[in-house]
Image (cartoon, rainbow, N blue to C red):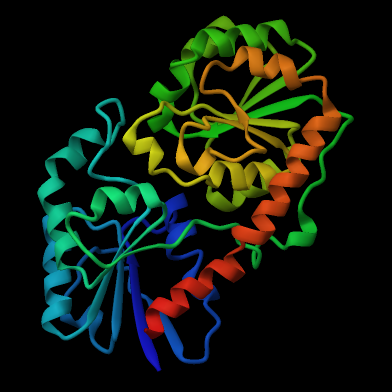
Length: 327
């Protein structure tokens, strides 16, 4: 029996859902026992790790995170550092840039101390390879335990809804195409453009009633809301840079399950898929091309879902975790 202890310093965010708290309870292997050691007081000592064979630490970046890793290694525990973003290449406009730039030395130290490193994408592996030779890509996946495949929403030809979801860190990504987005919203008043997560004041000031907004949710509330919304199109503009090239395509996974065709930046590795509508050269023209072609949009959603079934179900991706834990 392998006793796996895992820790996310933020318990309830999307990273935790896709990388620790939303995946380890579903490993379902008779030779593996898992335990979440999160402590709301954020005090961790030897007593937190006693009994562990493997310690999986999500996104360590602080000095006291490094100290916890060293303690685990002193106790003979195998340490796996788990990163879902490229924290060494956070752009200046990201709201976490100042903090993470100050912590670069600690991130590199954590990487070098780890027995293994798990990352979401090949791009992050490429950037981190200088600090650790044992890096494994374990992609983010659709959780088919919580959200069964038979409950996937079909494309709905009876509505016209375009949806965006994203947090405050994506302000620069959105504003790169702001005039295109504003023009598209204003020129398509028969469509509803629903924004979930962050409010973009510049958009609100220049658009009208068909630009609607939903407050941020917990991850469970978001999934239910998005699923109920069942948009025709989901769009997620991202700037082409190293940090975004390391991003996983969870926005694509979520949109597809909700029944939408997806528009994204195909210059980025995780979004370079034939059924993603390309918007790296501008949003407005691509939206105009597809907005009335519901036959094509439905095919794109179906093709996207077929790819997810083959490549990105948690029931399959967790086999990679089991393989690494038992190796």
